Length: 235
Image 1 (spheres, rainbow, N blue to C red):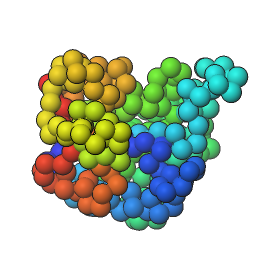
Image 2 (cartoon, rainbow, N blue to C red):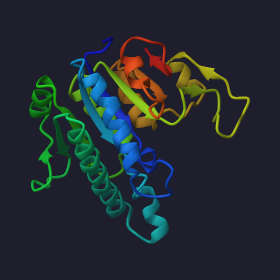
Image 3 (cartoon, rainbow, N blue to C red):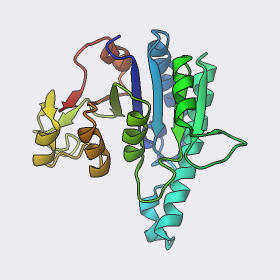
Image 4 (cartoon, rainbow, N blue to C red):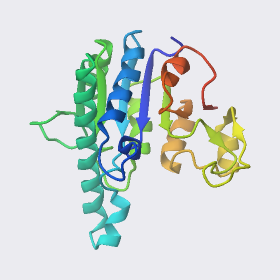
């Protein structure tokens, strides 16, 4: 395998599958099988998952909810998704641990960096829930931060498009796919890959980002095997 330890960032919306809301069990099962393929090759996998399928902290103000309160609600929603993904992984025969940035001992472990690394070394998938544990930070920022903390080789951003385009391919049919680009080029062209905090963290720590289509069967395994899948952003 090309990479030894990876941080896989999944969006909450991806878990909806063909539904309008919530969690699609078929999509969960698919993701679990894809992750199992690389774990069976002794790749160490950590995961950060969003919660857009349940609640977004950014929506809070529209509902009359305080932004900080709303962000904490979003963090709790990521733990729900993390529990669902953990159940699917263990159903596929993959050992896993769910760690949270907010203490909730009855359902998951608190995030402790050394313990997380030890789990990975024992070939357990580690799911990081509750973002960074702080309001005003997205799950993209949590993914970048956790990836740096566990010394991951790369951040894999699993989306529903097959890479980075010159503009949104779902809105612009003339958008052109980019196979490789630098952090500086992505910033100068204002390409929306991750939020700026998350992107800057990766840039400053020379941590590559690969954006790829997680919904395409076998894509994750092909990427880990060294095939040119998606778009890579490097220093």
